[in-house]
Length: 185
Image 1 (cartoon, rainbow, N blue to C red):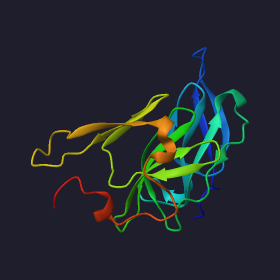
Image 2 (cartoon, helix red, strand yellow):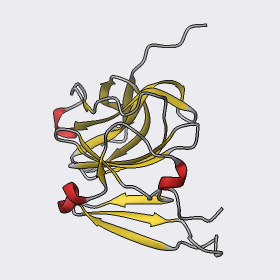
Image 3 (cartoon, rainbow, N blue to C red):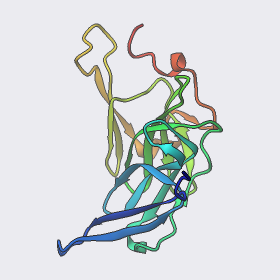
Image 4 (cartoon, helix red, strand yellow):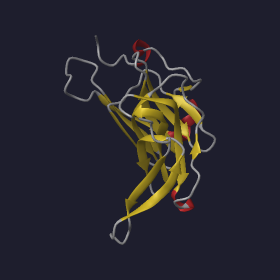
């Protein structure tokens, strides 16, 4: 049995509520995480058999909604030379945030500027949940202490300070112990 060709189509309910319509005809990879705002569609993609497991040639992508269903999405360079599992994404149309992991237990919390695909990695951060407004990235951090059922903090990152957040991403994920120090072993 052969795998279907790589690529995704995004569909949604038509404004007149009379069925579905194509929102974006061709994303040149298998979409695993999808997010949108008023101006953009964005997310993560790769070439893999299952979004829950791994995506080869993992990348970010984005398209302006105003360009219509036949827009050509922009995409980041390949993020990592091994397969990744994407865990979530959020966009405000200027930036895209996403979390990802490799099977050996390496994690990453990424922030990318869509225009030009400058990518930052936020060390020692792996949020349980995150969201983005036009000005801020919010991240709900898992507990650091014995209260494992409670959120320890919610962090707010000012997106105007993008170049000072985290570290430039060089295509290398960090070991789990370097990034995820929030829950004691």
